Image (tube, rainbow, N blue to C red; front, side, top):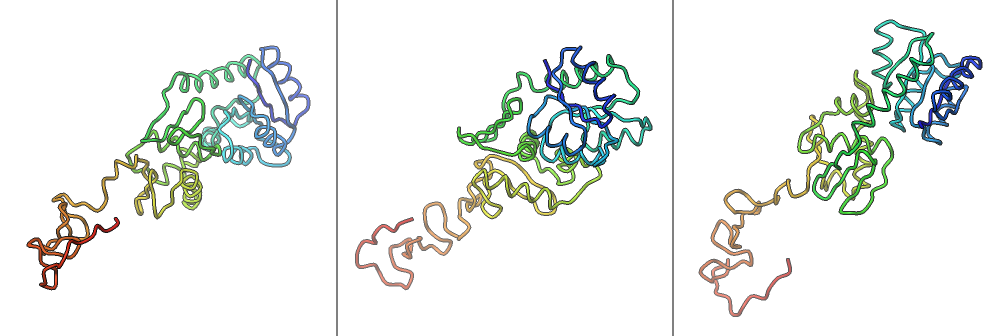
Length: 280
């Protein structure tokens, strides 16, 4: 049995929808306004929302965008407009499907079941996405870092899941806005940056000291395992970035403790005793 939320201001239509959906075996809650519907969707977490676009307090499309900022609950939009641009706009704002008024109970029930079936099929039995010590379970919406659970908001989870699906690849901010924020025409890059900052904090890293989330300047962001970044200061010939070779000697022949390879100090004098070990 699916738990549905119907957001509809017309009491007669709302009552008819409730009766029809309950007759089909669904549990149904209702909300008469956009803000009440938004609150109910966040608080009660239904399996699916049927959202009317013509609401008295807030435009239904705006309610949809606000809902998408905090939840990935499936949404079927009910609208009296059947023009293609209107449908494209609704789907672009984050709707999973739409239904044009007037419609029958059988059609609505079929669309509800189709959306739930489609989303369920994509998540059922899927293995968690793993990147190094990071595990993203899309079906259960759970994240673990080195075996410990990480508490993320719905938007943070969606952002991390999208990056995990593209692990090792640079993902542009435009793509993230389209796929995670459902803004295909683009939006504020700052929105992405702020959420990346919050996500980094929860993964125990910063932009200056990244482990998993690496910004590629002017291009986007890449999720990769820490070991995939390489050892940092060692060049391909074995020399470190400070000029020392892998045996501890510098390019001028002196070792890292200041003595030359023939045992003389860098000022030309021989050492008068063993050099004590230095802390790393």
